[in-house]
Length: 413
Image (cartoon, rainbow, N blue to C red; front, side):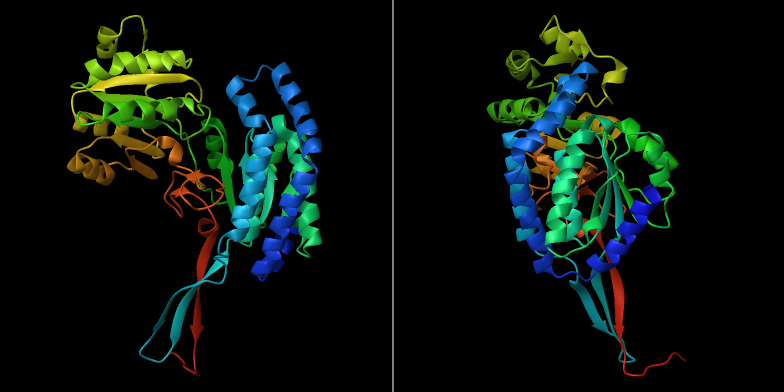
């Protein structure tokens, strides 16, 4: 079954390579219309997945990721409209030059081909991934988690109907219906049909994909994100940023997992900040210096510093200076998202230059590492590898370039 789906995807990719922008945008707008017209059915189907997830004891953070409601459906629809409004990257000539022998050499942007997208929990990702792949001219095989199978299948039905109505190949978007673990191995071995694998989920999933894939993998490991509160920080600003970075949505990869605080501002900053965190239900795992300032907290273990909690849990460490903060981030960070709060220009410049992460922020929440928030439109994920993309992956990151050459009879001597 999976090989037949992959063959259909490869055939669809050939047609999508030459699809016009108007055709693709029409399909996207029809997707939005279909989702709105069937939203009650979507929510009802999603409730089946939620009920089963609760019976299995999934965490509240996982349930949050799984849930489709009026708000998330409106967000999916808005995302489809936004992707439709974005320029089509396919066919863009990125460079052109003339050789001494008269050859005109250029580079033009093309789709990757067939993308295998593996993800967990969030059924809204089904729509985001389908939209971005279609607009960038790629066919996609979607392998969601078993916990969201009913939601993913109804969304696939709705999206495929829109693609067919727009006279594009209906097999451009396919959700793999199997919930068996063996399906992963089969997908990861089909390098004759699939051009790239993009996994999106927990560290265990990513590691499994990287270790078992015969197909190039665009990696997104864990999001161990830090906010460093510098000695020259506006502390009111720092409180707002840190609270947002941890609490606004703790179960996502761009949430803050460790807060670093300069020792000079720790006495005035940490007591009130920790009260705010506790009021929001956050469990604090603190270094010894933090415990001296705020007794009664849980002592952090060495294993807490590299942990992506994806929950209302926060590690807190006091650092002597910015060099120690930079060393700590370099040791425990995951190249995902890092932020500094400071009013010192030189400090902010140094942080931007020295921190190796896909997005580095000054005086802003880590939650802004997101395709929508950065003005890219919907994203298919955040790459923490550097080949061939680094950071939020939107339309251009789902394409590559090929060389085109125009001659007038030249031959090589």
